[in-house]
Amino acid sequence: MSVSTAVKTKKAEIVKKIGKTATNTGSTDVQIALLTTRIQELNQHFKKFPKDHHSNRGLLKMVGQRKRLLNYLRTTDAGRYTSLINTLGLRK
Image (cartoon, one colour):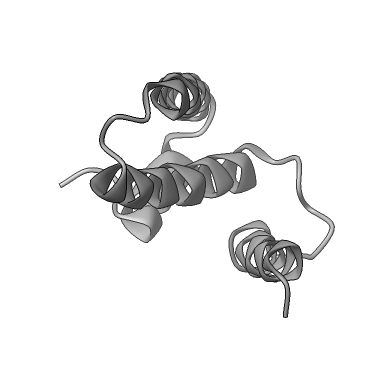
């Protein structure tokens, strides 16, 4: 199995788990979950390559995007926000 198919299957699993259907890719919950997964993968990358400053900029942009989406979700639907936070384990 190639890397691209592994990424696609992992993304499809996240979409199906968080979005409840396989086609619900645009919901705020799914976007936050996908960004969280990519951020966690990049953190593992930085443990191996700490001087990769170009990828660090991408990581900071993803963290900012996730923060904006979380703020939007918190203001529109607090129940979904708290359940998503608990599901993803973002706040401790």
